[in-house]
Length: 400
Image (tube, rainbow, N blue to C red; front, side, top):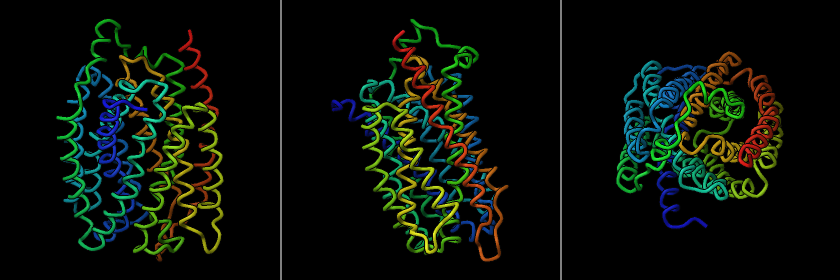
């Protein structure tokens, strides 16, 4: 059980992640709406996702040099203010260039916000309960899927695609204020810095465990973002799922994912990341084959989408719980900031690469999805090996 202070921190960090995830995830489902309004080809939508990813990667690299110097409470509030500005700019965009620049601004601050959120959890929550806490914080993704994204789609359908961006910016401003005034001061890592020097960038990257962990991050994100930006257009245009039902698809998927994340968080604490993550990998490979490579006709879209979210969530909880154990306590923000660079660079690169697989037909259907999914499956199959190596090395270093 989390004590009162831990619960408060997990709740507030979860709120930050909810806004961060909502800002990121609503752009993809809204893509067909604003693409039609702004004259953007559907096959170019992954470029908008890539703009966010590459900006977040650059910000993560720069942040690794200074984030550990600041009170995490103040740092995360500043990151949230920048994210709000980027979300607001998205609602004001008038073409592909404007939307991409808005997502670059959002990524510049959204990437560090994620790094700081995980650093706060790692600072406050002991390793024995960290999987459960990570499951709770990652549940923000599911809450965004259940409440935020379906609401954004409904609002877009009734009032126009710009309004969801303005609404998310307003919520983000409220969460930024709450994090500034309700989180406790989080400066213990600075006290550790005074007695234990923080590793330089070169020293950090010279550690084999760190390099294996970043390789695991790159593989996981590339596997996911080869297919994730394409899903809304694929589901609606290739599988014929109605646009006016799409928000309910996301809501049901979000509920299932929320439940699964909490269960797999506990399972990760009990089994370890390798066993729990391997289970998620096996499930995700099976679902991707049926959903994206050989879909039946008619395809049970709801069932397959929910299964995909649950499988991806299972492997992601195991991964996140493991990576927080890699750095030393006083250098977590630096490690996680660099991880954010790898995370978003891989996501952005995979999003850009996915456009080379795809071609849009005159009726809106996308050609090349099975080949794209096959590439994602090859990368996914490598994850158990990497998770096993990192977990073994972390366990060995902890006992030495």
